[in-house]
Length: 314
Image (cartoon, rainbow, N blue to C red):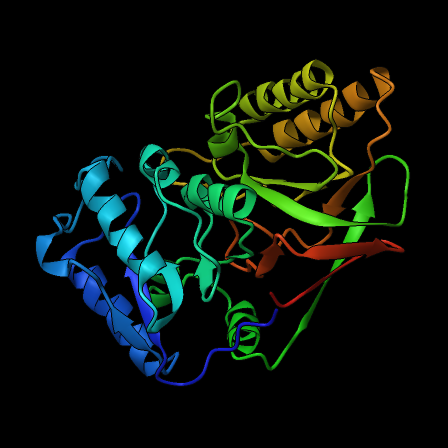
């Protein structure tokens, strides 16, 4: 199913996690209208609390119920073509108990977001069988934080001018051609659900992992948890796809050499447990948190053939 977007289609802009300031909201609206040629709409805008211009933390200003009500309207209405998250930050997981009470809605629009939004996108993919575009949030685009080439590729994808996306990979253990649905995203967000009700189900899927601002030691802990989950549940991903881990965030700049140690440890531990899981890494570090972040389709059958990942428009 290809969901096509046309000029002036309505985009429902949502704030499921950290809010924005009023000036950021206006920049997002202007970007959506003037550079995407789409019609921005913020449901329940008059009821939302917006940030001051400078914030000291990323805790959401609006209650989980208020944020869910906005998401619910965006999911249920029939006149928008895209649900696009304004930003990530922190707090999307708060909405999962409310989402669980909804009857599954058949997908008739695109859902775009990443980072903290993986809590919601993973639910929509697993429970409702939605396909997700893992791509920059609107605030990043409005702030010009994303490279023009990556921004243009996303635009081409939205307007169905480009249906195939290809990524060059390097193999970290044993190469294998395969096909599978991609699931996953920001590793620290996924780890927050390990052992709980909303733990990711990666069985027989391509598990995509990326993150920002995480030290190698912390990543090493997350990777070890994944191996423990595989061994405990006796289910495993068809392959593991590693995106970018080198991007800094406002809370810290990770050391590249320590991240490399964590990645190497992950590959070694997989081998030591005799798990036959191919591990691939994106060559140009352009999947996940990165100023050259490319879009990635989650929930759609994708191919890895001869060190190249190919996905198609959802």
